[in-house]
Length: 290
Image 1 (cartoon, rainbow, N blue to C red):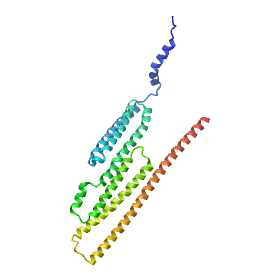
Image 2: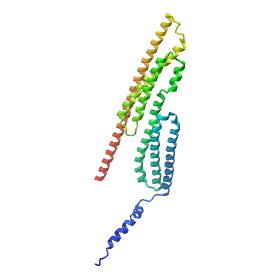
Image 3: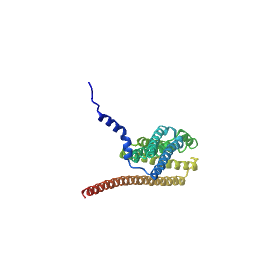
Image 4: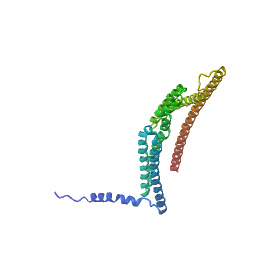
């Protein structure tokens, strides 16, 4: 059977082939000044990518001494730093191609990547650091107990308080991640602040016991005056503990107030953005009616 040619098919194929070139011709021309600015911005983005990677490498060096406390978390910080650096490099490539729309689209990815990196970094620099510094090591306990036997009850209490604080900070660190629920995370943090406050009080009591033992080394030496002075000293020390607890409660209320202010500020910002969009929409509708 003889089939008639169908020239429209060839025309369609040709149009599809030429479409990218036609679109490029239709796109607005980019002047030399804009191209130069884009080139500078591309260099900046690549510089930022290098700095992000360098900062993460330095973080690993700075916190290496905390060993097992941060080992697994440093994997997250490295991955998140690399993810952010790659977005910066993609933005640089978009600037190379003078693709402003692609740059704008990538900025949203960058916001998320940057936020994730900072959260993983905070997990190490803030919460794992607190955990590691609170934890009582065997070496610390042996050094303290080796030369000061009289304050052993206070030393044991301090060791337990340090362990409890370290465990509490560890729970905070474990909960700190990009998708964490803010309210739940804040509750865990408050538990850790409370445990750490008890560690500070136990440290005070151990220090005072230590100082007493340095003075009263021979317990065979006794007197009524010595007993009265000791009772006065211990009463004043307990008064100091009460003041410390009041400071702890005040600090807790300040944290709550700061959290409330941050939340209200965020709601205020969202309200402004919403009002701004509504105003722009009203202006657009008004212009359309003219």
